[in-house]
Length: 276
Image (cartoon, rainbow, N blue to C red; front, side, top):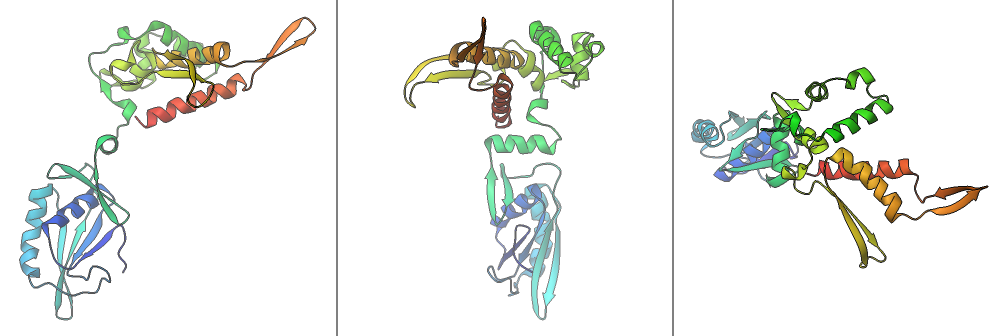
């Protein structure tokens, strides 16, 4: 047997190893052996094995709120312990901190990483979080109408699908969590999503060099409108076209086709949201 992300060897018990047990419960489970040489895994035994056999189950439960199997094992005359930790459906903390076993290291989760882990354990995603005290009447009607127009024109929905009251449409799009609109609904359709999500706008800048910013614009409002407004602004103000003529008809050819630019823009926005 080799030491890896699910197995750890310790020559003796230290309460510090409760962090390891916490980390296993928050990751994929694992086994901690007490009474094995740290580097080789050779059994060296512990003199207080039977005492720890009685103490550790209660200590683990009282410190972490979980149950772990603690087994007394033998190799000839040597006694050692095996602590088996299952993966838990909810995140476990130890003294107010959340630990996670990754590879051969134990690290503390905090900030965005902790938020995402908590949501994932409850079957939620960042955009599915309910926002209380916001109703469909608070959403920007023009943004909803724009969505309907684009959904029908792209054949994602039929005219009959969108010819319903707003709250029914939002419910069909799964933008309600129980009786509350979700963060996704706020981002897409609210006139001021920055009330709930800091930085929920797009900034455009025109650089002559890496350090020479000539002018810039900020696009605010519902995300579904931001995309169209940014696309129009880039092609009317920021990107120059090559001009050609076919007879009397003026032909403008841009560096990027609009569809390709829109795809790049959507990918950038989604990447930003995934890191939120």
